[in-house]
Image (cartoon, one colour):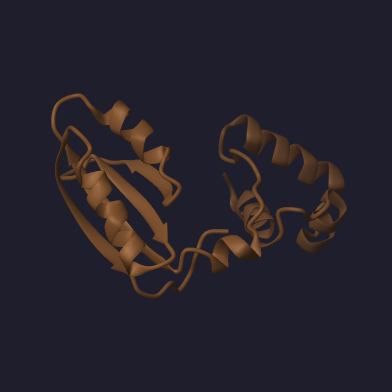
Length: 142
């Protein structure tokens, strides 16, 4: 990936619905170059897809946090499926180091957030966890 690819990705992050013509004009590239680079970035897996961020998604679930989970045994796949089924779970990340999973959680209230934490802690196979509330976001992925 070179600087032009990075500029293209930055432009797509800014407006994922921008047309190839608009991207080409803003990046001072030909339409064919933009199309070819986008296709190559998708084929290589650097771009996995495009998504829509809705206003209501950003406004909902104002209480957010990260729960780090340590799992005993080989229950990671089962616990991941259980987590994904919860509507308050926004993302589940596998990781290395002390924790097996990092879970992004969103809730409408602190009480709902606490209830979800208690529910997750009761999952069979969770050995220990630690949770941090997110107080302020300086930059969020689009």
